[in-house]
Length: 133
Image (cartoon, rainbow, N blue to C red; front, side, top):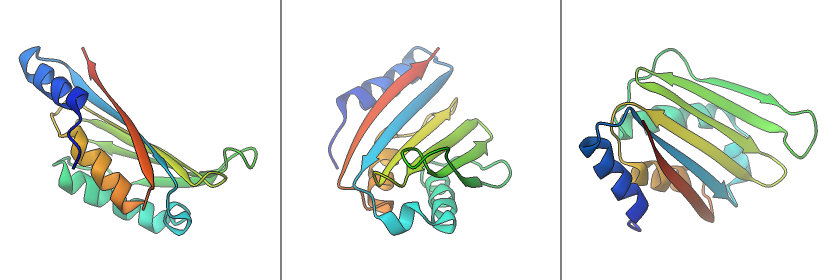
């Protein structure tokens, strides 16, 4: 695993500054097209991610396929968690995925990035971690 210095700084600051929340944005490129086009797999990802980062799901995962044109068509996902929300969009035209995790409970952003990249078979990933104060 590659150590993300910014992610570690955000986690440290989360505790030290008593921040309200932590947000991680993950952009995945070159994903497995079969996985991002499978609603069941996307739901599986959410369940396993919540277990990994110790988040309690609130209700069922919503996965809906839509898009007004081919550029943005794909599944979108939302999952309420007791401490906020996990969401994502999966773009069919580019085999990309855009995942957001926001929680007022601390978690490891690097775990989110690494797990998402592996689960969706992405060739590469970019991420941002932000404190919500």
